[in-house]
Image 1 (cartoon, rainbow, N blue to C red):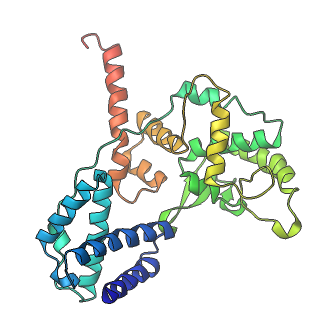
Image 2: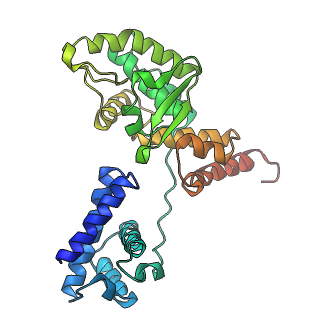
Image 3: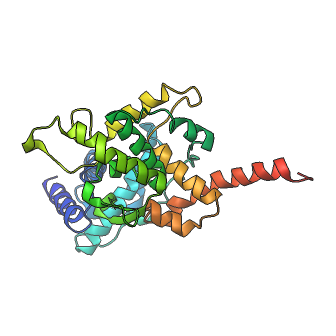
Length: 302
């Protein structure tokens, strides 16, 4: 078991240094691999070289018995496949038994998005005469106007904004950066918030606690993902048109509305910061439904 843990340590270092994965991703990899180590120990398998395709089938059976979702099983197998691929590269094993395993098909969930009338209602709720109202309005405009992730929104600093060309530098997953444009509504909301609301909120901090994060809480500290979720929930309570909302819904809405208006898939992929086009293609399911509704409503022989 000591040698197994040594291999795992090498792999974790590889993920941190060469792949530059986030700490959360690394923790997930580590948990998945340790779970497999527990299984092979129970099966009296002493080394990773001894693992066969048959052993993996037994492991899959055990995962199903433990009532793991297909998505979780796929992730675990993917983690172990990557682990063995690394071990092969480093010449610790001769082959990758996980390369023979096909991953369970993931359940394709259609992204939830907001309709334009729902968005319009949300955009009229904040009291922009107050610092928090200005901040909330700016958050809504940025989330919908850029399609960035909420974690990326929390990470924006003042120096990341370029009002002269209307872009924001976004720090995405895996430390990857991209420039994302924002429109006139976001531009106006941001300028008002930075010049007025943010200054008032930041005044509550001591000089030694000053920072350059764009979005702050009511005490002047940097806003968190949970903080944005709370803000959105509070805004929802003030409207009867929307029952539930989660921060990622703005990202889904951004992509769906762009595609509905004729934007090409590659451009939307770049704006969202998706590494693979397949991640963006899920939004075509929504746009197909949209086109079908238009056809059924307007075509004489529908």
